[in-house]
Length: 138
Image (cartoon, rainbow, N blue to C red; front, side, top):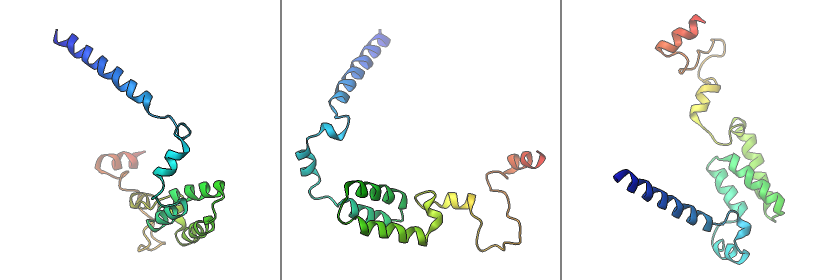
């Protein structure tokens, strides 16, 4: 009896959630332009948000906002474009991933404090006690 009651409760709850999900607009074109204008009145512009992302060293999202600014032909897009170009010139290895990540740096880039004449060891994840032995045997 308890199983049937639980199954019926879950089915009714699931149908209610599906009904609520259908009330949410699937994309922004389903929302009226006036509503979007009022909602975005006191928010930063695309260029300002892109510059804030560059200050946080998040060049990947800033490049996406630059692309949007170029497609919309925003008047201040030159500022963001200059900022992205300067940032990519200063920190070129961040461009590949879009954001700095120390875990990725330890895997793919050698430590600059070590001499280049010394061979670099395998990454730590490969040379654990058990996996390292199996890597060396193969």
